[in-house]
Image (cartoon, rainbow, N blue to C red; front, side, top):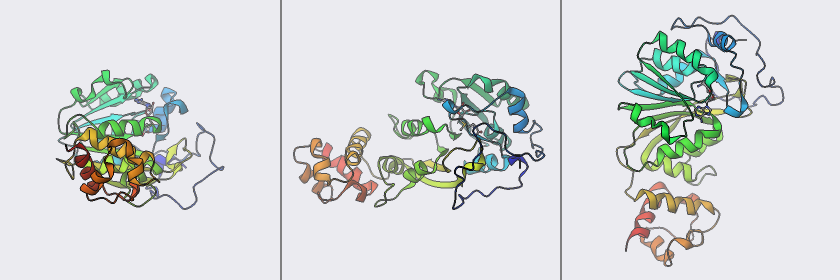
Length: 316
Ligand code: SAM
């Protein structure tokens, strides 16, 4: 059954993920007549066939061909009509098309695989002046992506899993706040999404949750089973939406905050007085000054507690 033809897919992860019953990577799923695309462009399956875009594992290529799903992701990003959108990894352009159809003022899409460029050029021709395709590695600072975008900027991406976390951490730790973006709406493997929105005391709570929730409001907006993608990955996925707050939830020097959090979670099972011993000779006093019990562990400390500790360590 073609995903383009489905009226609406179940978007919550089913209890039992398909395991060894998955088709091999790159294998064509059973077919259904494709649904016509609202933008008049060919169905994604036809685009992929016409341009020979067989999925490459090394590039994290798991394509979303269901236009209902790409539209749901575009909608979760909020009002795009007054925003420039940065998309990383447009691939054959399913999400790109949804962003443009949802009225994005402009989309700047960075794609590493040159095979995708002709398909993306067809989308650019359909929406004159609204799609700029940049060929390159989104991790390459020389691309200077912020300079290509006019605020407000919303980042929306079905990220390659191998670069997703690195990009997120970069976007969460800019030298100045607020950052160049207003929101991030990003696909991750489900475990990573859980780590971004996790609350204290849970196993998923860690550095990613603290960095994200210190300066953003973060929530999961969609979960997807492997079968939503072509080819299906081995894991479930989830889309997280992060809205940048105008200022952090509690003040602290960003470099010190990042240092404290990294050290604390590096040895998350240890008491703070041992895991943070290298931070200051009088760490127990500083922990108390921050209102924390030195025998607590990192996973018990809320975001505000880490900010208080970063201030206490930085104080003379
Ligand atoms: N957005 C498309 C979709 O939803 O069907 C494709 C998503 S696929 C998971 C990830 C895409 O990112 C691929 O097109 C891949 O070529 C591209 N990609 C991988 N690494 C990249 C990088 N470092 N910079 C830019 N694009 C990258």
